[in-house]
Image (cartoon, rainbow, N blue to C red; front, top):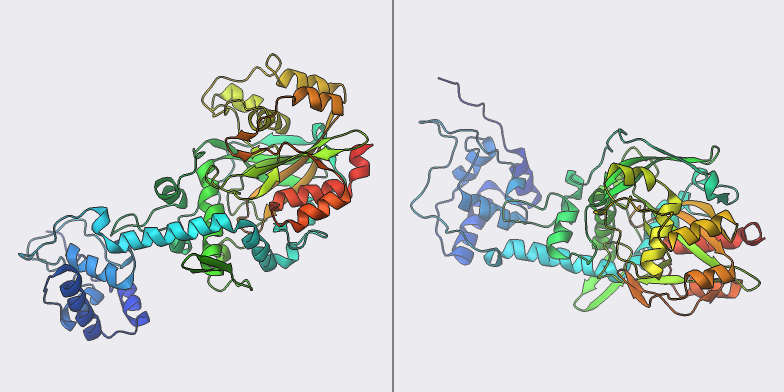
Length: 490
């Protein structure tokens, strides 16, 4: 006969009770009252009952007791510190005996705690979408050491080693892919992210942030596609090293960080929402756990490629993209670079992964999708024959002849999400631009494309900055391109 498991005190339950300022008798009274008022049940919960739970004499109380405790402490049932027993032994007093009264299974809509948790989460998520830029600017104040000269109050941060002294021709940047790169230390399921993961059931929270987005607020584009994960930046080579990751890996960290920040820095009163005037790390447990945003071993950094497109000539001009919050998982509601897209292959077929491990190929596909309305290269098809298909073949020829020149400006982070932008600029001769984009679409899968291009001049850049609509990445690319305009446009 196996010996009984040793009794382990439930310190989690003790801490919950003490943090609520309750004695064991107070907790018993509160649970009895809650059972009567909410469920019309009248169990015999006493100080002795609570004591047995806390001392570990009962390791797995009845479901109704666990539900009452979860209701009272506003947490999931699996956050109460109880240990589900592997087996029950006859005569052992470690599992609460079944009473004659039991609670019938109920639908999700009859679980007020779950409904309230999900509703609160959705409201913060929706408010986050409406205030992304303002929150990014506020979050930037927590990372003053990483502010970029000339880019204060834009939400963009970086470090000197990520910004080359002058733009680097894209064909000189060497990329290396390490599919066996070590997994990141932080994945988004840490206890510090509990506050931004709502209840899925009365007993469990959503295990990752992306699962809550999928079920409660899914945008139009939301697939867990293969992406290239930035691992190292070295402009002395110049080169970038990448591993591999999934899109949801980034959502579980980036969007969780943004949600946590919004939760504690947005005042939501009915239909009125205001951003709190001063940022504080005090309640940002997940952000503090992540620590250094530039330590690429701690978290998965998905490399998004943003390209400032400049129609060159004697009167250069630029085009921007108004991203729709309902269509994208991140960066909605702001004016962003066009094109811009996650650094990922067009297909998971190995030949495509190898061929598409190219920043230029990624930029080409985004031009085709965002400006010309091509269907999404969604990762399910065969490798793209770039040398035969348009507009890719024409673009390649224009690059070869110098009519399109592409440069890398550097890498920045959004201070709100820690999402990374590999910033590039493509300077296109006027005739080539007009030929390639004669039939530009008005809208695409991610937002709207303004018909009017903006003059690439100081007054325009000042006006755009004052509009307070630029994404951190767009603000950074415009500033860096303007700073190096003589290098880019000569």
